[in-house]
Length: 235
Image 1 (tube, helix red, strand yellow):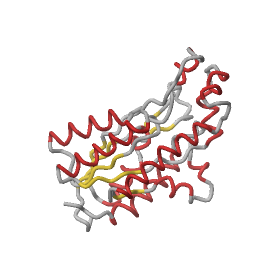
Image 2 (cartoon, one colour):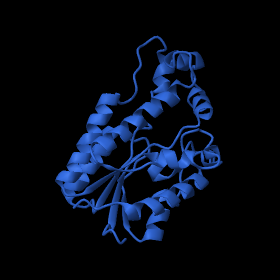
Image 3 (cartoon, one colour):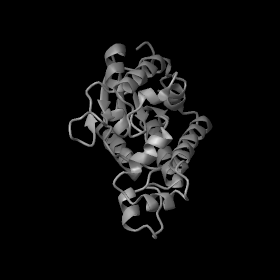
């Protein structure tokens, strides 16, 4: 690309990995070959090192990034994408112990501390960090998904009786990422905003309410193709 970015590494969860649901294969999730970054890399011609892992939380994202930095294989740009699993609960544990105190997998303060650590590790290694925001949930589909096969009363109890609470928690973590990026001059690809600008973003999402579908990943690829050439290389 003209901005001098030739190799991009991605550190995220199932969304950057390309996970979809409802494919009729008998699997809970399937990974498609045409993920958003794979499509964008083919169009823009950059080398892609995708270290995104299904189910990843920020602890694992930071660990993989650190290892790649130590190996010297990250490249020019590191995409940091996390939050969807961090802000979520272990719903099986909630169903098993509905009266217990349950917290998100990663507390917001810890999530933001590790996000900052990831950014600083990149900059210390003279790698440009880039944060991707979390694609929006389809709130009603997501609540049905997390309740399926679980103790729905227990799930509602953790949600304080409000099925939209998981959506607002998701939004809180995302807004914290945006605020952090602006405060620390970290470049941002606002995938959430881009998808909400689609005529009907629900048509871009799987029925679990959290993963983009194949059309959604193609749409995300088009956003990458617009955004990545405009990223300014910091070093």
